[in-house]
Length: 460
Image (cartoon, rainbow, N blue to C red; front, side, top):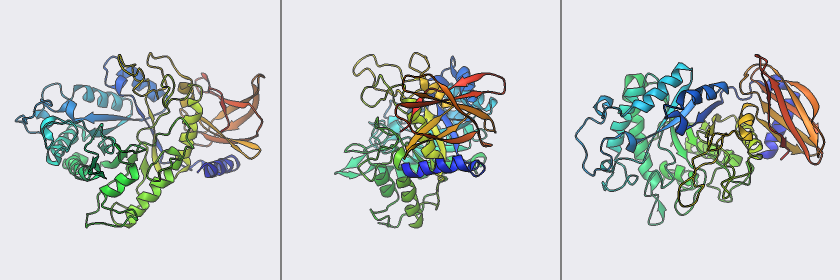
């Protein structure tokens, strides 16, 4: 993958007219739940996201948070398929987000997911174990009826291969969550499409987390079991083809960076996306899914310090984000890339201090990281032989413009390397001679005269 990506950069530098349409379908989406569901910060955050020229946001809809009396084992008496039958105020924050986003030309993807109300599980004791498909179908229909005229992209369940959202993951040592998810997905798909306003909406399957272990089912093993396929992608029983408009995945990597290759072949991080594409193609040929499904990377980010378990330095985050986006960009099957979060999760009051996500472009206190400027002007640099090959994007200017590339060697000062014209989609490429301890940065002047400078990055 790394060699392929670099060769693509070389072609980009040599053939800008061809590269202009290299990824015309790939959409960027943003997820910032803490800010977007808070009335005090929603509007300013949406303006900030729109300022990046991002026109899609993703929001999880936790069933437990919307259902009446979720802690009760006894099901309350109400029409769960009717959004008006839910308690007053149930939809308030989500209504305001969807409306405010729409007013700015920003579309919303909704992911219907667990945890779930206790009364909607088989045992009526858990928030995640064995949700009842019939109850979920009704909930999906209610959400679809509420937002069908304003939402056209949906996905079913966040990380169903993870015990935080669905269980049990294993039964007698074998993956069990795929079987549960298959029924939930089909119920959710039918529930969303039950309303005429949702007839042409797209529904994504998967939303899988990137790696597995004894508690988390590995994503490709999850995919096969969900589709009744064996290790050779052949049907183990007569399961019907599942309808889907794309496969959603969270291709997080480790602190080793975007080119990390998981040793288990059933794991899929950003550096090994072809594993997922091949799996989808084999599933399509087996008649388990529609052929040629696109990949939607609906959740992605680079963890930073102060998370010293999986985070990298804040100075390294910009390079890793850009390299990851370039990997997605050159893959023709990737329809969507994403950024999670705007701000890091708040520190925990007890226990391990940084136990959430520190993948934001801002620190938890709101201060900008170098990744904030880098998100506007991503710049990926890879070493290839005696050259450094650069790929970049002017995110707010999806039209032809000009950027200035600068270089700094060792402890020297920044100097101009070249003025480079972008393609009609704001993409550019450049090739420079590699030198030790060499760093690059990009400068761009917006049409309104405001000047932006990206953080320094080195070749990887």
